[in-house]
Image (cartoon, rainbow, N blue to C red; front, side, top):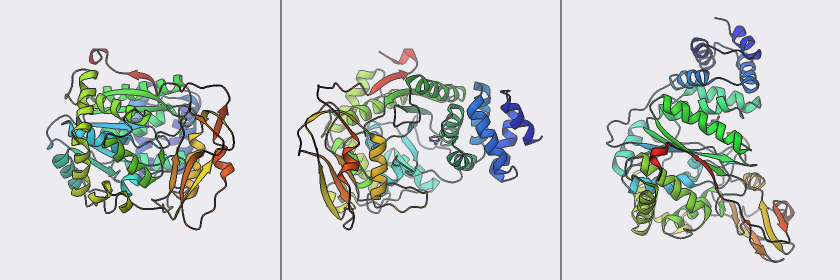
Length: 439
Ligand code: URA
């Protein structure tokens, strides 16, 4: 088999066979196929797309490039969640403990942040002492003892994805529905969960800018999961403004803990986390209907069971649980400054991508994979879309290094003001789920 023929076939819009796809994935991972040929094929896939059969074959080949986790020693249906990534998205920290507290084991592998989006691993790393890279035994122990496990993805799960993702990152081939589907689903299938809830982000800050594209990605992942016997459903959620008030790792831990304490329960972040958790409870068999699942979610917050589960997870994995009560034990910024509104008006839009990049510049995110983060820095977003503000009111509070200087103008340029009132749009844009599960 020649790699040249695969590239040529796809360049003309033809279909690759499962054998050809397996040949490419194996060769890309073991280095026998040069990067320039893989890059050429990736670009051809971006332009020409792939059929469902090809996406399935690509997902399987990537899944089988590494290890598959066996979680069968932990009783119950294991339910995972994946989000396609957003600014201020700390839903995993909130819903993981909720779902586990409601009796459904929740195994999750997370990523580190890159560019404008943060990573769940970095957020958990802000809890002093917490081990964020668990061995397989530690991961299974955490799941068995607390029903919640979260760890950085280990290198032996879908290693072909690591190689191909690095090539996509530098060849402008990340935004392709077949490639995103295979990348995410290969890791999820190897991770050993029985069911998966997807949060597909849609909007100017997300990979998928239009509802049509977001639906396409969601459907593609649902098709692949279903074909492999995984229960799967997807919510499509709006991504433009940052999710919640916190951007930055320690700040995001604080916001998550506040929600688990029962504060800010009416915010978009809380509503979204609770809804995703409810979907997970239905999939895990802990509730039959959405209202029943939502009632269980609320009970886990009100009784303190969800926060207690987070404490047990943190304690088991070496973290300092006192930091969940006393936020002064979390990493701190060198200084705190406010950015004040320079006009009166109604907030019509908040540019989450631009704020994510500004947080990255402060040291909360990575420009390069090897950057070391400052876990204490970040941004408190003090306004919401639709809110009226007066000139001189604080719109952002910045947590920065002691020697850092900032330009207010950059922060203010992330806001769009209108004189007339603005109604914020719904956060839930669509859902894809088996009809028999809805009521
Ligand atoms: N996240 C992944 O893991 N893979 C992609 O291709 C895109 C987002």
